[in-house]
Amino acid sequence: MDIEGILRNGESKTVEFKEIIPNGRQISQTAIAFSNGAGGKIFIGIDDNRNVVGIDDKVDIFKMIDSLNSMIYDNCYPNINSNIYTENIEDKIVIVVEIFPGNLKPYYFKNLGKENGTYIRIGASNRKASFENLLELERQRKNITFDEEVDRDIEVKKLDIISLEEMFIKNGKKLSQEKLFNLGLLKKEGDKVYISKGLGVILGLYENTNINCARFKGKNMDIFLDKKEFTGDIFSKIENIQMFLQNHLRVKSKFEGFQRKDFLEIPMLALREGIINALVHRDYSNQGRDIKIGIYDDIVEIISPGALPSTLTLEQIYSGRSEIRNRVIARVFKELNFIERWGSGINRMINLCRNTGMKEPQIKEVGDSISLVFFRTPDTATLPPDTATLPPDTATLSEKEEQVLKYLSFGRKTRVEIERELDLSSRRTREILKELQNKKLILMVGKGPRTSYELKKNQ
Image (cartoon, rainbow, N blue to C red; front, side, top):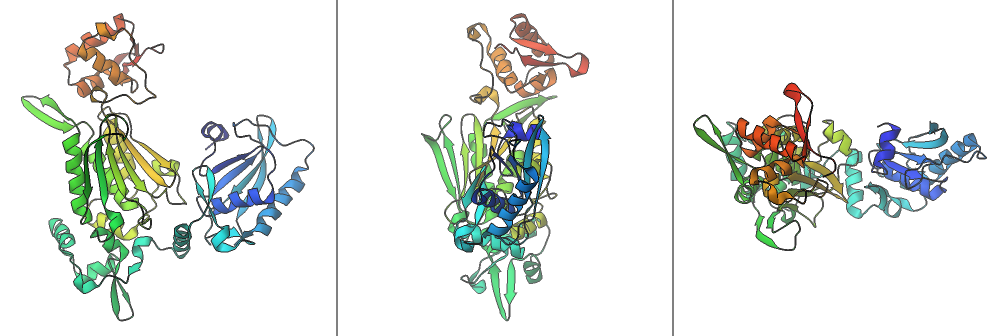
């Protein structure tokens, strides 16, 4: 990302601003947090309001760079890989401390030790690592995932894996003992065979694998209309979640020739991608929380415990990069065709929504959780707060004209997109668009096949 983008987006998982030269503890704490994560850059000479103030001319830049290098070297362990240099931004000198992701995690303050001196990056802040965070950093150093660890408390002989065997048969495959070992579902240590925690998750043996779904009245969680907690194996959970969504989302209809076709207001394939993504990538080492799916009047939200893997950013996810948090679960899902291709799920989900004229789903880190939001269609949902509101004289509008205006509140649309979304004939759509233009509520943009329509800016 260029400096304009950095200033526009502000501090984040990989960016920190310092107006003045920080002390040794400040710079080292952020260096440790960045090393334990995806790396990052500290910009010295930019204030919290993203204003470039630069470094005082009286400061000896070269001595300051040497001093910063010494601070990081003296305070941090293991040694942190960094690069410190200057940039000219808006004709002012800014010092950039670039920290690279480390391979010897966890990194911590030498004088405080691993348990008390390890820091991680959560959002735009540094947070002292919990015991669970330390275990995860240790796993990263050893290059293993939580679901690859063995569970010595569950006896293999007493295990019921019928649900898993049935899924393999359904896909025309046989689940042999050899396959169980190859997929990492069973592990052998000496003469003993144990299950992996991944198999425990797939069979739903742990309490934190339950999934809670709720339909709320309105746009908040004050009143719920329906609530379900799904237990059991991971495959039955997927089916139950889909049924819950189908029961509470509107079904739309469209005629193709003489046949009527029904479809969900949010494409089920897109919702399914979101559900599978949450199941494969959630942090199962977090024992206190579970996946939550909330249906509101305006959105469907899937909240998955665990922030992004420490070496991954949201920008990298959208570009198609994939980093698997749970390799055993991912291997099984790939084997059973729940995953088509690594790193393709997010973009497929976005394209499925985009192709139906919907607003693109939004992914964001909320503390140490991931939130995936699908926006419901405007004619049945309250518009998101960042969309335009209807003009005060809507009493003079027909029902279909209001629906068109609400749909345009999500952004510029073509006539064909409006027809498809609102199930209108070509002739009727043209009439409505012409009437809304005459009322000076919308604008026509472009000419020919690329012609589109948008709300007037002053509305």
